[in-house]
Image 1 (cartoon, rainbow, N blue to C red):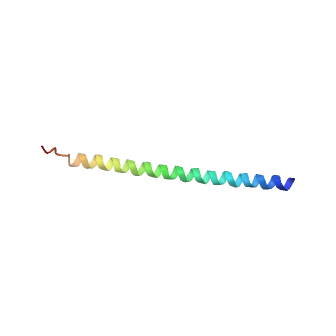
Image 2 (image 1 turned 180 degrees about the vertical axis):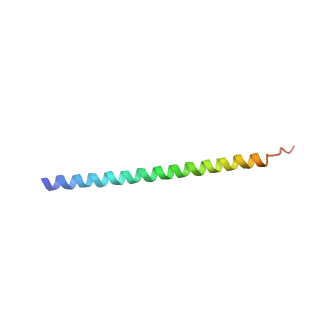
Image 3 (image 1 turned 180 degrees about the horizontal axis):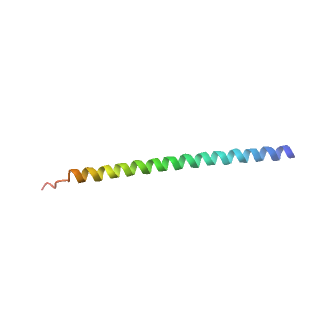
Amino acid sequence: MDNTVIITARMQVVHLINLNVLFRNMAVSLVGAALIWLLLDRKSEVSTALCPTVSVD
């Protein structure tokens, strides 16, 4: 009986660690995507400021 309790507790700990790693990976990828998006956004703003689009009729 004690053995099964130890095994289930160990499995729960491993499951929690896996969830923690998964969430951390998701957070890192979200932050990376946000940074890239911001950089691209800034780049487009700078390029439009440097060379404004000329409307051709």
